[in-house]
Image (cartoon, rainbow, N blue to C red; front, side, top):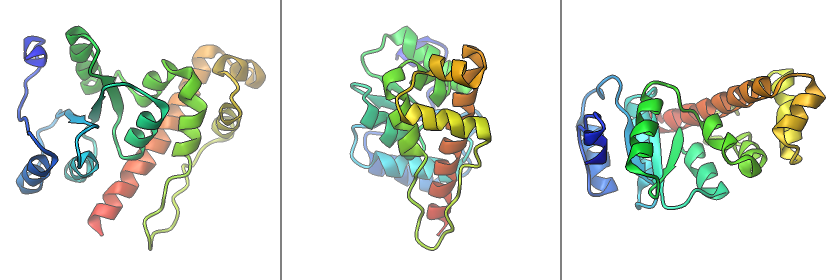
Length: 198
C-alpha cells in the first residue's frame, strides 16, 4: 500500500518462497526496471534471490529485515541482495529506497557507509566467497588503491584515516569503497548465476 501510494507499481506479491520461486521459474523475462523486495526472514529467501538473479542478472534485489546487523548484511550481499532495508523504516523511506535502487542511486556502499563499524568486517567476508565445485576461483580484480583500502578496513581503520594515509579526499575514499563493493557483489552474483546454470 505504501509503495503504491508512493507511485510505485507493484506487479506481484507472493506469500511464500516456494510460490515466488515457482512463478519466477515459469515466467519469461522479468520486465525491465523490475526491483524485487524479498523478506530475509522468510524460509527459502536465498532461492528466491538466486532465481531472480538467474532470470534477470541486472535485476536489483532489496532485502527486508527487522534489524540490520553485520551478519544480516554479509549474508544478504553474499547471496546477491544489493540493498537492505529495515521493516521499521517509515513508508517514505521505503518508497525513497525503492526509487533510489531503481534509479541506481542506492548501492551497497551507501548502505554500508551508514554503518561504518561493520564496513571492514563486511568487506573482508565478501572478499572471500565460496567457489562452486568445478569452477576456477574468481578474483575480484581489485586495483592497488582498492587492495590497500580493503587491507586497512580489515584492520578496523576508519575510512577518513585511510583517505589521509592514501592521500585522497574523504569523497574519493567513498568512491574506492563503492568500487570495491561493486566488484565483490558482482562476483557473488556471477557465481550464483554460474551455479544455477550448472
